[in-house]
Length: 81
Image (cartoon, rainbow, N blue to C red; front, side, top):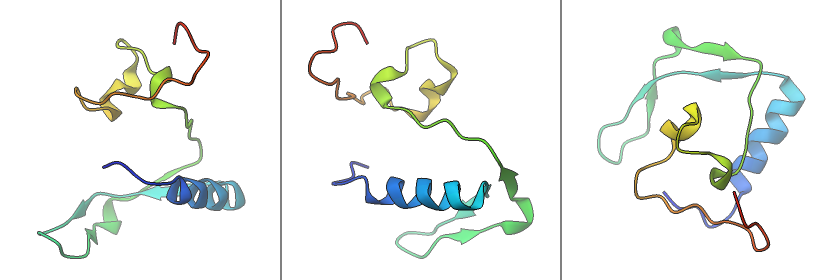
């Protein structure tokens, strides 16, 4: 997925800052149907660290959030990410 803007992330971070937490739950989605969350398996999270993909190194535990063929955009002027 390649978003055209950061509007969804901006909304999430604003809601998280207001609530001080978020819920994380697995979901099932068949084809183009609406996701069906399993709320009985939800967990409450009170901490999150959001950072740019180019800041994640190959030995960083957060590397699991990126696909092998992802090519994070490195900002101009950054020589050694």
